[in-house]
Length: 228
Image (cartoon, rainbow, N blue to C red; front, side):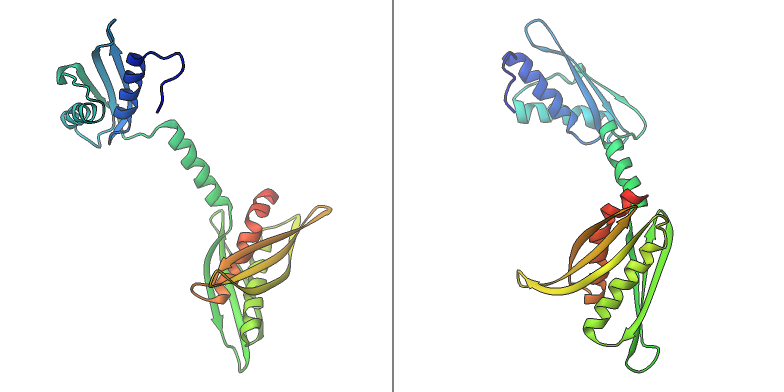
């Protein structure tokens, strides 16, 4: 961290010290009061109950000495503890992530059954905003067909919550790249008077059928959020 153009060395040192203290375990914020000569007169630290007050004081003393060569008498360090809270930026970020996870489509399960010889049924379960969505397709029991059925079942499941929009599966394809098998899915998202080609991908890990479902979700999730 370089000093600001108009920042004197003493002020820069204190700013570094405050940022260092704020990075310690359990510390929410730190404020240093300096004298006219730049000497540290008071160190005020706000913490959670994660770390005891005495330990915080020792941590502050050790960190300042080890990192900055700054020796501060422990009697100058005051610690105030509050309930276990998080900085506003962290709370806002977590709230955004949580809200997005409630809205977006999440893969839950994939069930493949054989109702009769040479036929296969594929059921896909998704979750959106706490609601379970299910889609099912049946067809010929053949590797390429199973991938198509899984993708179509995923499309059918996500369509259950769309009222003024729809999705149409263009196709799925297995490709080999970077020594891995990857499923590509192309889906048309239809909303209002417009149609948009959406493309997603997923690496084959557990099964090609599951990768097909994940590729459909990769293609449609952002578009899906815009339709809600």
